[in-house]
Image 1 (cartoon, rainbow, N blue to C red):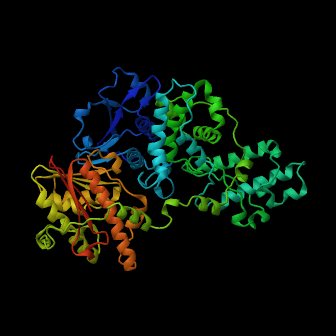
Image 2 (cartoon, rainbow, N blue to C red):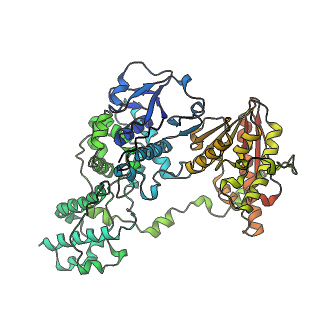
Length: 592
């Protein structure tokens, strides 16, 4: 059933280059491909050409035929969008902006589901627990690879087509390696037993197999003769179709069981740890998700660009070639791709067998041992000692207004942090934190200043600032949608008109603020909780001070005057450092 309410939202996409067969940057091609797949028509779309973008209408070849596209100059962008990197999507009132590829794509999916609740194929794109690409690129290597690294690597490869012997980008080789990892699917026991049953039946049908090899344990004999792979080609295709059928059935309104026959008693008795691994059908495992939508335009243009060298290139990328063919089996993908001028290829490169994949399963204990980050060995003390030997140590400036406090009783209820669904004890500590921050900001801020609250969470700081400094522009930057929506609801109740909300990773906010961190120190800088031993908390405090010192230096490199202070009292927050920076252009940056 369709929801006929119209969501008046505007989407702004960058247009840096275009040819007869593609639009660059790839982020724009990816967004348009998803909109075509979702049949998203409730969002108004604008292409924003760069100043050096050539004219003409070739870009229309890469635009979905079912979605109207408008052209808008960069100077005509809404003010809140001008503070962000594209893609960016703005709500009707113009003060809530979502920026960044993953954030925008997830919102398009949610809007498509709101419009038509029967689009199960669209809702499943968000994956198990609706978390696909939800973790920001700053903390998730997988999100960074798919959202940033792969698109940039392919764009760089496309620019260097003159070199016919150009090496495959390491990011794509890394993705190929990721596809070799074992598949982990929630509640996959049933599917793995069905696979074992198919394998067992095929063994029984093969007269050349020895009786001893018909036992269940034979499927995990790493020393099995690889020459038998060719004899199992038909079996591999059947096993593969089992998992592909299972994956595609999840996209249907009515799920179709992958296998209807009852499991044999001997199959049901097999321990879960002894079951065969599942074949990876799509990028994140067994099911088609938003990650596949992101990767398809990128890998398609990469495969196309290989030209006469394609067969040779695919020899190094057999799993990506297989994935590329699997994606084309998803209903609606070919239609959406064709609508965007993406004419998918039929790759015929040799594909790895299922048996080879099972035998290549790695020992998880070995993987864990090899993945240990050597930089974290020995704790923070060696790094701290080296810094101190070179005259670098944490420096703290006394808080200029340690006893200053807002009159919370006479402020509107929506300004009080208790309105943000906090417990009374936590709300009191939050008030103390806010007193520390507001006292410094009000001392420095002047009418017309812009105040940016990075990683704003539920907006406790920004809302108080917007209310107490009505002549300043306040911007909240936060990756979590739920937190920003909660903050916006509070601001709507207060009728504040001097505050913007930007849901984005820090990479997508274009303000002149950068953070450089030492990984070892950052890890231990988080260890300041009150329940930790005093000595450990002190080390955490020193690490946090060194990290913040690096932040201060970074701010000073960008012509800010900055210093580190501590909140009062110390008990108001285990992370009570406060970085204050002011610049000559009167914009104010503050990090707590």
